[in-house]
Length: 436
Ligand SMILES: Cc1ncc(COP(=O)(O)O)c(C=O)c1O
Image (cartoon, rainbow, N blue to C red; front, side, top):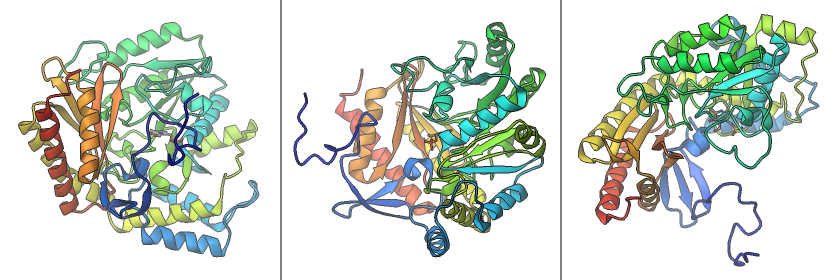
Protein backbone atom coordinates (compact mmCIF):
# COMPACT_ATOMS: atom_id res chain seq x y z
CA UNK A 1 0.00 0.00 0.00
CA UNK A 2 1.31 3.48 -0.86
CA UNK A 3 1.41 5.80 2.16
CA UNK A 4 0.30 9.37 1.54
CA UNK A 5 2.17 11.99 3.64
CA UNK A 6 -0.04 13.70 6.23
CA UNK A 7 0.53 17.13 4.63
CA UNK A 8 -0.49 15.95 1.14
CA UNK A 9 -3.70 17.87 0.33
CA UNK A 10 -4.86 15.04 -1.96
CA UNK A 11 -4.70 12.32 0.72
CA UNK A 12 -8.47 12.19 1.26
CA UNK A 13 -9.43 12.44 -2.40
CA UNK A 14 -9.88 9.87 -5.13
CA UNK A 15 -7.33 10.71 -7.83
CA UNK A 16 -9.79 11.05 -10.71
CA UNK A 17 -7.13 12.36 -13.11
CA UNK A 18 -3.42 11.56 -13.64
CA UNK A 19 -2.20 14.61 -11.73
CA UNK A 20 -3.50 17.60 -9.79
CA UNK A 21 -2.10 21.17 -10.09
CA UNK A 22 0.81 21.67 -7.69
CA UNK A 23 -0.97 24.35 -5.61
CA UNK A 24 -4.38 25.12 -4.14
CA UNK A 25 -6.36 27.89 -5.78
CA UNK A 26 -7.45 30.38 -3.15
CA UNK A 27 -9.48 32.69 -5.30
CA UNK A 28 -10.32 33.52 -8.92
CA UNK A 29 -11.29 36.81 -10.60
CA UNK A 30 -11.63 37.76 -14.26
CA UNK A 31 -8.83 36.17 -16.33
CA UNK A 32 -6.79 35.18 -13.26
CA UNK A 33 -6.62 32.51 -10.61
CA UNK A 34 -4.56 33.07 -7.45
CA UNK A 35 -2.52 30.54 -5.49
CA UNK A 36 -2.01 30.39 -1.69
CA UNK A 37 0.59 33.16 -1.87
CA UNK A 38 -1.87 35.27 -3.91
CA UNK A 39 0.31 34.92 -7.00
CA UNK A 40 -1.77 35.78 -10.09
CA UNK A 41 -1.87 33.14 -12.84
CA UNK A 42 -3.47 33.89 -16.22
CA UNK A 43 -6.15 31.28 -16.81
CA UNK A 44 -6.05 30.44 -20.52
CA UNK A 45 -8.31 27.41 -20.11
CA UNK A 46 -11.24 29.41 -18.62
CA UNK A 47 -11.39 26.92 -15.76
CA UNK A 48 -12.48 23.70 -17.47
CA UNK A 49 -13.30 25.61 -20.72
CA UNK A 50 -16.38 27.10 -19.04
CA UNK A 51 -15.67 30.59 -17.63
CA UNK A 52 -16.35 32.63 -20.77
CA UNK A 53 -17.16 35.74 -18.71
CA UNK A 54 -14.00 35.35 -16.63
CA UNK A 55 -14.11 34.11 -13.05
CA UNK A 56 -16.76 35.38 -10.62
CA UNK A 57 -18.37 37.83 -13.04
CA UNK A 58 -20.55 40.35 -11.14
CA UNK A 59 -23.63 39.52 -13.26
CA UNK A 60 -23.35 35.86 -12.27
CA UNK A 61 -22.93 36.77 -8.60
CA UNK A 62 -26.03 39.01 -8.77
CA UNK A 63 -27.99 36.20 -10.42
CA UNK A 64 -26.96 33.78 -7.67
CA UNK A 65 -27.99 36.26 -4.97
CA UNK A 66 -31.36 36.72 -6.69
CA UNK A 67 -31.88 32.96 -6.81
CA UNK A 68 -30.87 32.61 -3.17
CA UNK A 69 -33.55 35.13 -2.20
CA UNK A 70 -36.17 33.17 -4.21
CA UNK A 71 -35.41 29.47 -4.76
CA UNK A 72 -32.32 27.38 -5.36
CA UNK A 73 -33.70 23.91 -5.94
CA UNK A 74 -37.18 22.41 -6.39
CA UNK A 75 -39.02 19.11 -6.88
CA UNK A 76 -38.00 17.97 -10.37
CA UNK A 77 -41.53 18.23 -11.79
CA UNK A 78 -41.88 21.87 -10.73
CA UNK A 79 -40.95 24.79 -12.98
CA UNK A 80 -39.95 28.32 -11.98
CA UNK A 81 -39.77 31.67 -13.83
CA UNK A 82 -35.99 31.52 -14.53
CA UNK A 83 -36.37 28.11 -16.24
CA UNK A 84 -39.29 29.21 -18.41
CA UNK A 85 -37.52 32.49 -19.25
CA UNK A 86 -34.25 30.75 -20.15
CA UNK A 87 -36.07 28.35 -22.48
CA UNK A 88 -37.82 31.31 -24.15
CA UNK A 89 -34.54 33.23 -24.46
CA UNK A 90 -32.85 30.26 -26.12
CA UNK A 91 -35.74 29.85 -28.56
CA UNK A 92 -35.34 33.54 -29.48
CA UNK A 93 -31.60 33.18 -29.93
CA UNK A 94 -31.62 29.95 -31.94
CA UNK A 95 -32.72 29.44 -35.55
CA UNK A 96 -36.01 27.56 -36.04
CA UNK A 97 -36.98 24.79 -35.71
CA UNK A 98 -34.84 24.55 -32.54
CA UNK A 99 -36.81 25.78 -29.57
CA UNK A 100 -37.62 23.16 -26.91
CA UNK A 101 -35.13 22.98 -24.02
CA UNK A 102 -34.39 20.66 -21.13
CA UNK A 103 -32.04 21.94 -18.40
CA UNK A 104 -29.66 19.63 -16.57
CA UNK A 105 -26.29 20.05 -14.88
CA UNK A 106 -23.41 18.67 -16.96
CA UNK A 107 -22.39 18.15 -20.56
CA UNK A 108 -22.49 14.39 -20.21
CA UNK A 109 -26.07 14.55 -18.94
CA UNK A 110 -27.15 16.85 -21.76
CA UNK A 111 -25.78 14.29 -24.23
CA UNK A 112 -27.47 11.40 -22.43
CA UNK A 113 -30.75 13.31 -22.72
CA UNK A 114 -30.07 13.92 -26.43
CA UNK A 115 -29.25 10.27 -27.11
CA UNK A 116 -32.42 9.14 -25.34
CA UNK A 117 -34.46 11.58 -27.45
CA UNK A 118 -32.83 10.31 -30.65
CA UNK A 119 -33.39 6.66 -29.76
CA UNK A 120 -37.00 7.16 -28.76
CA UNK A 121 -37.76 9.34 -31.79
CA UNK A 122 -36.22 7.02 -34.37
CA UNK A 123 -36.98 3.75 -32.58
CA UNK A 124 -33.37 2.77 -33.42
CA UNK A 125 -30.25 2.44 -31.29
CA UNK A 126 -27.01 2.80 -33.26
CA UNK A 127 -25.03 5.97 -32.51
CA UNK A 128 -21.99 7.29 -34.38
CA UNK A 129 -19.32 9.59 -32.93
CA UNK A 130 -15.90 10.79 -34.09
CA UNK A 131 -12.83 8.72 -33.24
CA UNK A 132 -11.32 11.68 -31.32
CA UNK A 133 -14.54 12.84 -29.64
CA UNK A 134 -15.31 13.74 -26.04
CA UNK A 135 -18.96 13.81 -24.99
CA UNK A 136 -18.68 13.02 -21.28
CA UNK A 137 -18.09 10.07 -19.01
CA UNK A 138 -21.57 8.85 -18.08
CA UNK A 139 -22.30 5.54 -19.77
CA UNK A 140 -24.13 6.65 -22.93
CA UNK A 141 -21.91 9.68 -23.53
CA UNK A 142 -18.76 7.66 -22.75
CA UNK A 143 -19.83 5.02 -25.29
CA UNK A 144 -19.38 7.64 -28.05
CA UNK A 145 -16.32 9.29 -26.45
CA UNK A 146 -13.35 7.86 -28.28
CA UNK A 147 -10.51 10.25 -27.36
CA UNK A 148 -9.86 8.80 -23.89
CA UNK A 149 -11.09 6.68 -21.03
CA UNK A 150 -12.23 3.55 -22.85
CA UNK A 151 -9.95 0.81 -21.50
CA UNK A 152 -10.72 -1.09 -18.33
CA UNK A 153 -14.40 -0.35 -17.83
CA UNK A 154 -15.99 -3.37 -19.44
CA UNK A 155 -18.41 -3.51 -22.37
CA UNK A 156 -19.53 -0.31 -24.07
CA UNK A 157 -23.12 0.37 -25.17
CA UNK A 158 -24.19 -1.88 -28.08
CA UNK A 159 -24.55 0.02 -31.33
CA UNK A 160 -21.75 2.55 -30.63
CA UNK A 161 -19.70 3.24 -33.77
CA UNK A 162 -16.95 5.62 -34.84
CA UNK A 163 -16.21 7.85 -37.80
CA UNK A 164 -12.64 9.03 -38.63
CA UNK A 165 -12.21 12.74 -37.81
CA UNK A 166 -11.50 15.12 -40.71
CA UNK A 167 -8.06 16.10 -39.44
CA UNK A 168 -5.81 16.82 -42.40
CA UNK A 169 -2.78 17.47 -40.15
CA UNK A 170 -3.07 13.83 -39.03
CA UNK A 171 -5.26 12.40 -41.78
CA UNK A 172 -6.90 9.27 -40.30
CA UNK A 173 -6.79 7.49 -43.66
CA UNK A 174 -3.34 8.79 -44.66
CA UNK A 175 -4.85 10.56 -47.67
CA UNK A 176 -4.69 14.37 -47.25
CA UNK A 177 -1.98 16.54 -45.75
CA UNK A 178 -2.84 20.19 -46.35
CA UNK A 179 -6.63 20.32 -46.90
CA UNK A 180 -9.30 17.70 -46.16
CA UNK A 181 -11.16 16.62 -49.31
CA UNK A 182 -13.66 14.60 -47.23
CA UNK A 183 -12.58 11.21 -48.54
CA UNK A 184 -12.45 10.20 -44.86
CA UNK A 185 -16.19 10.89 -44.63
CA UNK A 186 -16.93 8.63 -47.61
CA UNK A 187 -14.62 5.88 -46.36
CA UNK A 188 -16.06 6.29 -42.86
CA UNK A 189 -19.67 5.90 -43.98
CA UNK A 190 -18.84 2.96 -46.18
CA UNK A 191 -17.41 1.29 -43.08
CA UNK A 192 -20.40 2.29 -40.91
CA UNK A 193 -22.91 1.00 -43.47
CA UNK A 194 -21.18 -2.37 -43.52
CA UNK A 195 -21.16 -2.60 -39.71
CA UNK A 196 -24.69 -1.39 -39.09
CA UNK A 197 -27.40 -3.88 -38.14
CA UNK A 198 -29.90 -1.52 -39.75
CA UNK A 199 -30.71 0.56 -36.66
CA UNK A 200 -29.02 3.95 -37.12
CA UNK A 201 -30.39 6.49 -34.60
CA UNK A 202 -27.97 9.42 -34.47
CA UNK A 203 -24.65 11.03 -35.21
CA UNK A 204 -23.17 13.10 -32.41
CA UNK A 205 -20.46 15.63 -33.28
CA UNK A 206 -18.54 18.62 -31.94
CA UNK A 207 -18.28 21.44 -34.54
CA UNK A 208 -14.63 21.78 -33.43
CA UNK A 209 -13.15 18.60 -31.96
CA UNK A 210 -11.60 20.11 -28.86
CA UNK A 211 -10.30 17.16 -26.82
CA UNK A 212 -9.46 15.73 -30.24
CA UNK A 213 -6.77 18.39 -30.69
CA UNK A 214 -8.81 21.46 -31.77
CA UNK A 215 -9.78 20.15 -35.19
CA UNK A 216 -12.26 22.29 -37.14
CA UNK A 217 -14.69 20.53 -39.46
CA UNK A 218 -13.63 21.67 -42.95
CA UNK A 219 -16.01 23.91 -44.98
CA UNK A 220 -18.97 21.92 -46.26
CA UNK A 221 -18.24 18.87 -44.08
CA UNK A 222 -21.08 19.42 -41.62
CA UNK A 223 -23.62 19.81 -44.43
CA UNK A 224 -22.45 16.53 -45.96
CA UNK A 225 -22.58 14.86 -42.57
CA UNK A 226 -26.16 16.09 -42.09
CA UNK A 227 -27.14 14.82 -45.56
CA UNK A 228 -25.64 11.41 -44.85
CA UNK A 229 -27.51 11.32 -41.53
CA UNK A 230 -30.79 12.23 -43.26
CA UNK A 231 -30.31 9.57 -45.96
CA UNK A 232 -30.13 6.99 -43.17
CA UNK A 233 -32.96 8.35 -41.02
CA UNK A 234 -30.54 9.45 -38.30
CA UNK A 235 -30.75 12.59 -36.20
CA UNK A 236 -27.81 14.99 -36.10
CA UNK A 237 -26.81 15.95 -32.56
CA UNK A 238 -24.31 18.82 -32.24
CA UNK A 239 -22.47 19.04 -28.94
CA UNK A 240 -21.53 22.69 -28.39
CA UNK A 241 -20.27 22.24 -24.82
CA UNK A 242 -17.14 24.22 -25.62
CA UNK A 243 -18.04 26.05 -28.81
CA UNK A 244 -21.39 27.55 -27.79
CA UNK A 245 -22.10 31.05 -26.45
CA UNK A 246 -19.67 33.02 -28.59
CA UNK A 247 -16.37 31.20 -28.04
CA UNK A 248 -15.67 30.58 -31.74
CA UNK A 249 -16.73 34.02 -32.99
CA UNK A 250 -20.38 33.10 -33.64
CA UNK A 251 -22.95 32.69 -30.89
CA UNK A 252 -23.09 29.00 -31.87
CA UNK A 253 -20.41 27.33 -33.97
CA UNK A 254 -22.98 25.66 -36.24
CA UNK A 255 -23.92 29.12 -37.61
CA UNK A 256 -20.52 29.18 -39.32
CA UNK A 257 -21.48 26.07 -41.30
CA UNK A 258 -25.11 27.04 -41.89
CA UNK A 259 -26.31 23.65 -40.64
CA UNK A 260 -29.03 23.49 -37.98
CA UNK A 261 -28.89 20.24 -35.99
CA UNK A 262 -31.91 18.20 -34.92
CA UNK A 263 -30.66 18.33 -31.35
CA UNK A 264 -28.20 20.82 -29.87
CA UNK A 265 -26.47 20.33 -26.53
CA UNK A 266 -24.97 23.21 -24.59
CA UNK A 267 -23.14 22.93 -21.30
CA UNK A 268 -19.82 24.35 -20.03
CA UNK A 269 -20.15 27.85 -21.54
CA UNK A 270 -23.91 28.16 -20.90
CA UNK A 271 -23.41 28.34 -17.13
CA UNK A 272 -19.97 29.96 -17.60
CA UNK A 273 -18.73 28.06 -14.54
CA UNK A 274 -22.00 27.06 -12.85
CA UNK A 275 -23.28 23.52 -13.54
CA UNK A 276 -25.89 24.22 -16.19
CA UNK A 277 -26.47 22.31 -19.43
CA UNK A 278 -29.25 22.24 -22.01
CA UNK A 279 -30.57 19.77 -24.54
CA UNK A 280 -32.52 21.63 -27.22
CA UNK A 281 -34.60 20.16 -30.01
CA UNK A 282 -37.49 20.88 -32.35
CA UNK A 283 -41.20 20.96 -31.50
CA UNK A 284 -41.79 17.94 -33.76
CA UNK A 285 -39.14 15.78 -32.12
CA UNK A 286 -40.25 16.84 -28.64
CA UNK A 287 -43.89 16.07 -29.50
CA UNK A 288 -43.22 12.55 -30.75
CA UNK A 289 -40.93 11.76 -27.82
CA UNK A 290 -43.47 13.08 -25.32
CA UNK A 291 -46.13 10.86 -26.88
CA UNK A 292 -43.78 7.92 -26.47
CA UNK A 293 -43.25 8.67 -22.76
CA UNK A 294 -39.88 10.46 -22.82
CA UNK A 295 -38.31 10.38 -19.36
CA UNK A 296 -35.24 12.27 -18.24
CA UNK A 297 -35.50 12.90 -14.58
CA UNK A 298 -32.53 14.04 -12.47
CA UNK A 299 -32.34 15.63 -9.00
CA UNK A 300 -31.28 18.93 -10.51
CA UNK A 301 -33.31 19.05 -13.73
CA UNK A 302 -34.89 22.54 -14.04
CA UNK A 303 -33.22 23.90 -10.90
CA UNK A 304 -33.85 27.64 -10.62
CA UNK A 305 -30.39 28.79 -9.44
CA UNK A 306 -28.35 27.65 -12.45
CA UNK A 307 -31.15 28.80 -14.79
CA UNK A 308 -30.98 32.29 -13.25
CA UNK A 309 -27.23 32.28 -13.90
CA UNK A 310 -27.80 31.05 -17.46
CA UNK A 311 -30.08 34.03 -18.08
CA UNK A 312 -27.36 36.37 -16.82
CA UNK A 313 -24.76 34.69 -19.03
CA UNK A 314 -26.99 35.04 -22.12
CA UNK A 315 -27.57 38.69 -21.33
CA UNK A 316 -23.86 39.48 -20.95
CA UNK A 317 -22.89 37.50 -24.07
CA UNK A 318 -25.42 39.50 -26.11
CA UNK A 319 -24.99 42.90 -24.42
CA UNK A 320 -21.18 42.84 -24.51
CA UNK A 321 -21.04 41.34 -28.04
CA UNK A 322 -18.79 38.58 -26.80
CA UNK A 323 -18.91 36.61 -30.05
CA UNK A 324 -17.48 39.63 -31.88
CA UNK A 325 -14.91 40.07 -29.13
CA UNK A 326 -13.91 36.41 -29.50
CA UNK A 327 -13.31 37.11 -33.19
CA UNK A 328 -11.23 40.24 -32.49
CA UNK A 329 -9.19 38.89 -29.59
CA UNK A 330 -8.95 35.53 -31.40
CA UNK A 331 -7.36 37.25 -34.40
CA UNK A 332 -4.82 38.93 -32.10
CA UNK A 333 -4.00 35.66 -30.33
CA UNK A 334 -3.77 33.73 -33.57
CA UNK A 335 -1.43 36.28 -35.12
CA UNK A 336 0.75 36.06 -32.01
CA UNK A 337 0.82 32.26 -32.16
CA UNK A 338 1.66 32.37 -35.86
CA UNK A 339 4.59 34.68 -35.04
CA UNK A 340 5.76 32.17 -32.42
CA UNK A 341 5.52 29.42 -35.05
CA UNK A 342 7.98 31.35 -37.20
CA UNK A 343 10.49 31.46 -34.36
CA UNK A 344 10.00 28.02 -32.83
CA UNK A 345 10.61 25.00 -35.06
CA UNK A 346 8.71 22.80 -32.59
CA UNK A 347 5.37 24.46 -33.40
CA UNK A 348 3.95 22.34 -36.19
CA UNK A 349 0.50 23.86 -36.57
CA UNK A 350 -1.75 26.67 -35.31
CA UNK A 351 -5.48 26.22 -35.85
CA UNK A 352 -8.97 26.79 -34.51
CA UNK A 353 -11.49 29.62 -34.57
CA UNK A 354 -12.25 32.66 -32.42
CA UNK A 355 -10.92 32.05 -28.93
CA UNK A 356 -10.69 28.28 -29.24
CA UNK A 357 -7.22 27.84 -30.69
CA UNK A 358 -4.86 24.90 -30.91
CA UNK A 359 -1.08 24.96 -31.10
CA UNK A 360 0.49 21.63 -31.96
CA UNK A 361 4.02 20.71 -30.86
CA UNK A 362 6.07 18.37 -33.02
CA UNK A 363 9.56 16.97 -32.82
CA UNK A 364 9.86 17.18 -36.60
CA UNK A 365 7.69 19.35 -38.88
CA UNK A 366 7.96 16.99 -41.83
CA UNK A 367 6.85 13.80 -40.07
CA UNK A 368 4.55 15.71 -37.66
CA UNK A 369 5.70 13.47 -34.81
CA UNK A 370 4.12 14.65 -31.54
CA UNK A 371 6.48 16.22 -28.98
CA UNK A 372 4.71 14.98 -25.86
CA UNK A 373 7.55 15.44 -23.38
CA UNK A 374 8.05 18.99 -24.58
CA UNK A 375 4.31 19.64 -24.20
CA UNK A 376 4.45 18.59 -20.55
CA UNK A 377 7.61 20.63 -19.89
CA UNK A 378 6.23 23.79 -21.53
CA UNK A 379 2.96 23.46 -19.59
CA UNK A 380 4.88 23.24 -16.30
CA UNK A 381 7.20 26.16 -17.16
CA UNK A 382 4.27 28.36 -18.24
CA UNK A 383 2.62 27.68 -14.89
CA UNK A 384 5.78 28.73 -13.03
CA UNK A 385 5.84 31.90 -15.13
CA UNK A 386 2.17 32.69 -14.44
CA UNK A 387 0.17 31.16 -17.30
CA UNK A 388 -2.13 28.16 -17.06
CA UNK A 389 -2.43 26.17 -20.29
CA UNK A 390 -3.72 22.69 -21.02
CA UNK A 391 -2.05 20.30 -23.41
CA UNK A 392 -4.07 17.43 -24.88
CA UNK A 393 -2.05 14.41 -25.85
CA UNK A 394 -3.67 11.90 -28.15
CA UNK A 395 -1.66 8.68 -27.98
CA UNK A 396 0.65 8.47 -30.98
CA UNK A 397 -1.00 11.28 -32.90
CA UNK A 398 -0.81 14.76 -31.36
CA UNK A 399 0.32 17.05 -28.56
CA UNK A 400 -1.81 20.16 -28.71
CA UNK A 401 -2.25 23.19 -26.46
CA UNK A 402 -5.92 24.08 -26.27
CA UNK A 403 -5.86 27.83 -25.81
CA UNK A 404 -9.20 29.19 -24.65
CA UNK A 405 -9.07 32.27 -22.41
CA UNK A 406 -12.27 33.95 -21.16
CA UNK A 407 -14.01 35.96 -23.92
CA UNK A 408 -13.49 39.00 -21.69
CA UNK A 409 -9.69 38.67 -21.97
CA UNK A 410 -7.91 41.99 -22.65
CA UNK A 411 -5.33 42.68 -25.41
CA UNK A 412 -2.65 43.18 -22.72
CA UNK A 413 -3.43 39.81 -21.12
CA UNK A 414 -3.07 38.13 -24.52
CA UNK A 415 0.30 39.84 -25.06
CA UNK A 416 1.42 38.76 -21.59
CA UNK A 417 0.41 35.13 -22.26
CA UNK A 418 2.23 35.12 -25.61
CA UNK A 419 5.38 36.45 -23.94
CA UNK A 420 5.28 33.71 -21.31
CA UNK A 421 4.66 31.00 -23.90
CA UNK A 422 7.50 32.32 -26.06
CA UNK A 423 9.91 32.27 -23.11
CA UNK A 424 8.79 28.82 -21.90
CA UNK A 425 9.18 27.31 -25.40
CA UNK A 426 12.64 28.86 -25.79
CA UNK A 427 13.85 27.69 -22.38
CA UNK A 428 12.46 24.16 -22.63
CA UNK A 429 13.86 23.56 -26.12
CA UNK A 430 17.25 25.01 -25.09
CA UNK A 431 17.39 22.66 -22.08
CA UNK A 432 17.49 19.90 -24.70
CA UNK A 433 15.86 17.23 -22.56
CA UNK A 434 12.63 16.83 -24.45
CA UNK A 435 13.16 14.32 -27.25
CA UNK A 436 11.27 11.09 -26.51
C1 LIG B 1 -17.57 18.64 -26.25
C2 LIG B 1 -17.84 18.15 -24.86
N1 LIG B 1 -18.99 17.55 -24.60
C3 LIG B 1 -19.29 17.08 -23.38
C4 LIG B 1 -18.40 17.20 -22.34
C5 LIG B 1 -18.74 16.66 -21.01
O1 LIG B 1 -19.14 17.67 -20.17
P1 LIG B 1 -19.16 17.41 -18.59
O2 LIG B 1 -17.74 17.22 -18.18
O3 LIG B 1 -19.77 18.69 -18.07
O4 LIG B 1 -20.00 16.23 -18.35
C6 LIG B 1 -17.18 17.83 -22.57
C7 LIG B 1 -16.21 17.98 -21.47
O5 LIG B 1 -15.06 18.24 -21.62
C8 LIG B 1 -16.88 18.31 -23.85
O6 LIG B 1 -15.72 18.92 -24.13
